Structures are given as C-alpha cells and as structure tokens.
View 1 (cartoon, rainbow, N blue to C red):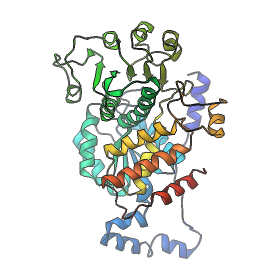
View 2 (spheres, one colour; view 1 turned 45 degrees about the horizontal axis):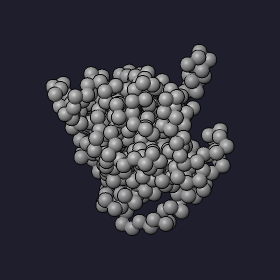
View 3 (cartoon, rainbow, N blue to C red; view 1 turned 135 degrees about the vertical axis):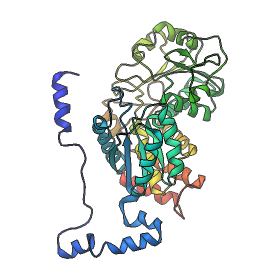
View 4 (cartoon, rainbow, N blue to C red; view 1 turned 90 degrees about the vertical axis):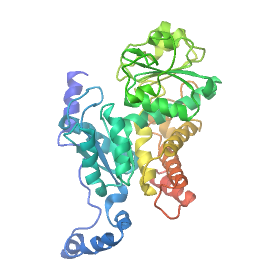
Length: 419
C-alpha cells in the first residue's frame, strides 16, 4: 500500500466508522417520559413476563454482536483485542450497508475458550445473534459450538462458514460447467485452519468424498501423529506427501494458505477443466493469468475484487443473519448454511442487471467460466440468501415465528432492496 493510500485509510477511520441512530422522536417532555422514566417501565414489565416480547419492544430483533479477541486478524495475525477493533467496526458497517442489520463490535481481551464462551453467554440477552470473528484455530472450533449450546440465539464464526458457503456455491456451479460429478472429484484444500476445515466439511455435505487436506507440514495423512482433532477427521491413507503430489489429477484446488505456493506446473498436472480457488490475500497462491496460461478452460476465483469470481464473505454473512433474525432463529443450522450456498449458486445463473454491470465496470456478465459467483454489489443476493436462510430455519424448526408467509417475506425483502 502506498504512503498516500495509508494516510487515506487512516483518515477514513478517524473517529470510528459506526455510531448510534435514534429511531424514535425525542423532542418534548412527553417523548422523554416515553423513552425513559416512567414510560420505559411498561415494556420492561411485559418482557419480564414473556421474554419473547424483547423481539418486539427492543432492538434485539435487528441487533448482532460482532465479537473478537483479535487472535487471527485478516493477514495481521494475533494483534490483540484493541487492534482488531477497526476490523470489527468494519464488519458492523457491512452488516448495516448490505442487510440493514444493526451491529455492535465487542473486543474481548481474553484467550481462554471457556472464559470467552462465558463472557458471550452473559451478554447474549442483549442481541439477536452473535458473529464471531478473527478468533484463531483451533480455539474457534471449541468456542463456536460451546457458545451455540449455551445461548438461544444464532452464533456463527464467519471466518469458517462465510468462505465455506461462497466457495461451495462456486463448486456447485463450476462442477456443472465442467461436467464433473462432485462425488467423483478429487479436491485439494491447502490450509487446514478455521476456513479450510469448514470448507472441507461443507464440500462433504454436497457430496464430495475425496478431499485431500494439506497443511504447512504437507498432506494430512493417517500416518501423522501431530494432528489436532479437526485435522484427524480428514486424515487419509495415501502415499502423497506434498502439495505437488496431491494436485496431480486433482479436479479442484482451494487455497487458504500463503502467496505463491502453487506453480504453473502443478496446475498443468491437474485434470482438464480444473477449478482453482486461490484465496490467499492480497497475493494469491497463484494468479489467474498463470493458471489460464496452462489451463485456458480453468475456472479461477480469488479473494480480490480486481479478478473474476471474487470470494467475498459479504455475499453471505449479512444475509444469513438477516434471514435468521427475521424468523427469530435460535441457531444457524447446517441446512441454513447449505441453503445460502445453493441460493448464491442459483443467482449466478440469472441474467445480470445493468446496475450490477455498472458497479462491476463491465458491459456483460454471463454464467460461465468467468462468472460462477454473484458480484458483491448484486442486491438480489439480499433477497435470495435471506429468504433461503429463513425458509430453512422454519423447516428445521429453529424459528420462533409462529407463522411464516414466504411470499410476503420475499416482497418485504424486495422492497427493502429496491428491486
């Protein structure tokens, strides 16, 4: 980043990026008596009798806590709770901008998983959902399920599931374009951290059977004695030991590792019409032009906005919480996440509106090799994903709403999205 851009970034963040918006009039003595004493006692009393009324008489129905301890922040690593605050504020901005969800960033100066769970459990009544963010592996694998078990609101660690949902959408579409059968595909995942493990699990949920995981020490195989519980789930019996070994005759590569890790020779050793998601950011494991120079028909995605098929978590996390909040879900189920992936995959097959083309700086986008994932500024994702998640929550029995009118909800979302 140039010095000029560095200074511009610092200026952008001066004073913080979020604040409080008052939704009710406070212009008279009567308003004050309603907003606080004595009027505020009335909603307090009815909520004390029926906790569910908190969704009606407070902002709980549209409020998410963005919680981090700063142990795995973007590409910066373990920078601590306070230094992670700009990122968490940024996440709150995205919640509001893309899905109309209010969010509060909460940075916790704690690394003990049990204590983090207890802190979050204690503050959970204030919120309709909890978005865990930038908490390092393997602790994040322990925290998320334990916290979800302890609270009755949806909890999601976006670093794990956001990437999994979007790349699963890409996998579904790329496999269709390439004529590949997912159960028959050889999928190589480089990077066995939070996102890599979650992606591999979701690929299994859509039928993948042959997944080879590679960490910093090589292929995750059954002969290794240095594997944690999460990696052991993917340990296989194989003679392959290196990433280069694993990529021979592979159908798909998912990179969540480090820049420049993959060579053109490795790509050339893959099967025809390979799927390559090189998501190290900002420098991917291999650049798209390098992939296409040896495999012109490859479907390539990165985490960058200046290349085709960007894997950007803003395509899912705001809308997953939007759908979950709107049906007052108690948790986010695997079916809700899978529904989000399938909705994104389906949306990419639809004709692309002019406003999305304009925002993307292109004259045409058509489902195919260079467009298998919707663009982040496609407002239709707000409708498609939120609706799919809400429907799945109702179907799974985790929604609190007694009646769900699918068409009415879709119309409401379309109105909010100005579609």
